[in-house]
Every structure is written in structure tokens, then in C-alpha cells.
Image 1 (cartoon, rainbow, N blue to C red):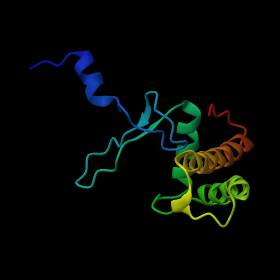
Image 2 (spheres, helix red, strand yellow):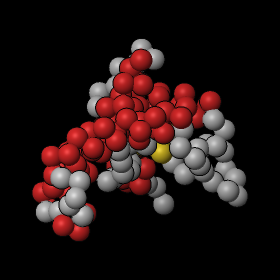
Image 3 (cartoon, rainbow, N blue to C red):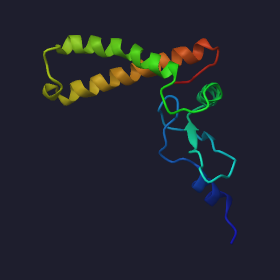
Length: 132
């Protein structure tokens, strides 16, 4: 049975996957382990060549990517400041259960943007342009 090129592309392209670096929707840049083994490594997808290059550099530095990388750990710590500023506006005595949906969404957005900004700053400090 012969497959068409469109059928092969549908099977290969990661519909709905998120970028392994910045967590934005992918745009077809990816990595798939070419070695056939009993324990296959998962494929990873990226939104840009910049994110793909950044991930590749990190993967070469660390043989396994189970724990947070030092860059991710630093980005999490950098995300604390924007979240704390927003909590200052909301009020520290308010419990999380007492927050409105809009306030929770704003906290999540502040945390995600803070993380992405820190990751972008680290990636661009290496001289690589990242479009996120």
C-alpha cells in the first residue's frame, strides 16, 4: 500500500503540540530520535529554529533532561517578582480560593510571562535570536 505525501505529513506533524522551550504552539520544527531501540526517546517540537537550537545546546550539555536545567530554575526564580507584585496589588491576606477568575488568570499570566521573559533573556545573551 502506498502512502501519499499528505498522509505521511499528517502522521508526522505535531498537531496541537507545544514548543519544548517556550511552550507556544509549534510550527513544524522538531527532533525525532533516529535510532530504533526498545526504549525510544520522545519526539520534541519547537516554534522556531532559535528554540530548536537553544534546546539542542542544552541537550548536549546535559545527557538527561529529567530535572530542571539551571536556566529553567533561574527563570522560575525570576518569575517570582512579577507574581509578587501582582499579589501586592491583590492583597497578601486574600486566600487563593478567594481570588476571582480574572485574578487567577492574571497570576498565571504573570508567572508564565516572567518565566518566558527570563528564558528569552538567557537565550539572547548567547547571541541567538528567539522570536517569543
